[in-house]
Length: 129
Image (cartoon, rainbow, N blue to C red):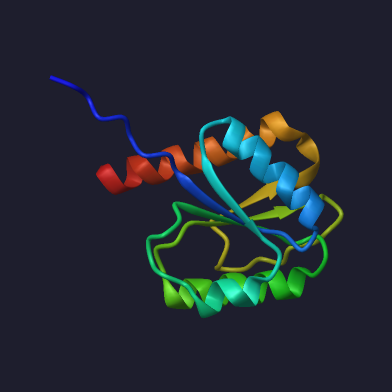
């Protein structure tokens, strides 16, 4: 009997810095994720289809208030969507019900991928248990 390989986890990265977002997507793709990078959060909300992505990552560096607003708007459309914010230690992210996690921006690619992996594994464990 042939086993079917699990589908790659789909990750959407919203980052206004196109170059850094592209690098992050390449890092995720090198680890087997199907990663898509966009710079404009409003286009994501306008064309949102539930259950398209396993995880949405939002960089808050350029505009934390807009990132939190996007996160809230996305959760209104799809309350079960897993959302994580990427933030430097010097950018204050106020307590907010939206993000499921905040990923430190400055810990490097290996730590970034590990945090993404942990988030997705936790999501799988919670949905199956």
